[in-house]
Length: 320
Image (tube, rainbow, N blue to C red; front, side):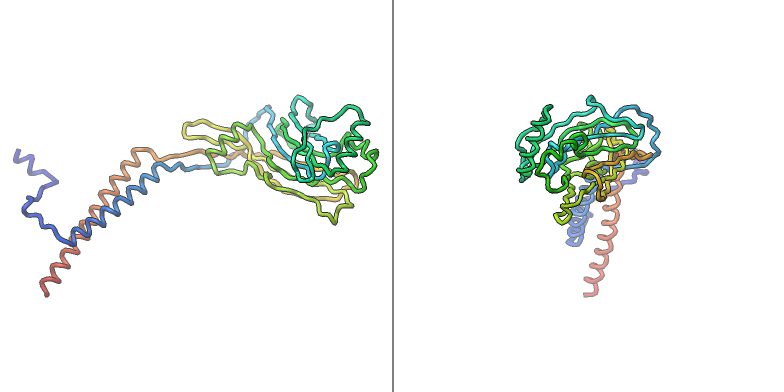
C-alpha cells in the first residue's frame, strides 16, 4: 500500500493546511465564469451543422427530363395573345404530355379575375381578345415543362394567335410582354422545398421577384425580352446521407427591338460541372476531447495566475 501511495500523482493537501484568500476567491470566480463561457462555446460548435462544398466535372449521362416550374405575370399582354413554345438543340419541341399549364386573366391591378381557357372558335377568341385589350387585361401563366438536358429555348408570345391579331382592331400599339417572375425553378419541387429548408447555399430561384417592364416612351416599338440562363446541376446531402439532386441557375437579361411580334425568350444551357454540398458535424469524441482540454487549460492557467497574484500580494503586505 505504501508503494502504491508513493506513485500517487494527485497528492492531497490536508484541509487544515489550505489557506483561503480573497485574491484566490476573485480568481476562482473569474475562472468559473470564463470556464462556463468556453464550455458553452464548445457546445455551440458541437451542435452547429457546417456545410462543405466542391465542384466536379458532370459525368452524369441522364436521359431523364428536367422539370421547369414557373409562375410568370404578363402585366400588359392578354392571355388571348400568349402561347408557349419550346425547342432544344436537338430540334425537338415539347408535346402536350410534357406540359402542365394554366392561364389566368389579370385585371389592371394584376389580380386574378378567372382562369382562361382558349375557345376553339376563332370569332369568339377575337371578341374575347377585343374585350381583354379594352380592359387592359394581363395574363398569369402557371405550370411546368419537362425538357431534355440539352441547350434549348422557351418562348412566350403570340405564336399561332398572331394570325388574328389584326382582326382585333383596337391594337393601336405593338403587344407589350412586360413581365414579372413570381417563381422560376429547375428540378423536382419536393426536393427544392426540402433543400430550401435545410440549406442556405445556392441560387435556386435567381429570377424570382425580378421584373422587366417596358418603358412607356418605347410603347410604339416592338420589344423582345431575352433571358440567358446557365443551369448548374447540384446535389445536397444531409447528415443522414440522404441526397437531393436539384438545379441552381444564374440569369442575365437583354432587350432588343424586334421587327416581328414582341415576345419573351428564355434561352437556357446546362453547365458541364456539378456542385455538391454536404452537411458536416463535429463528432462526440472530438467534442469530449475539446471539453477536457478547455477545463484542463483554464484551471492550469488560473492556478498560475492565482499563485502569482498571491505572491505579489504577500510581498506588498510585507513591505507595508
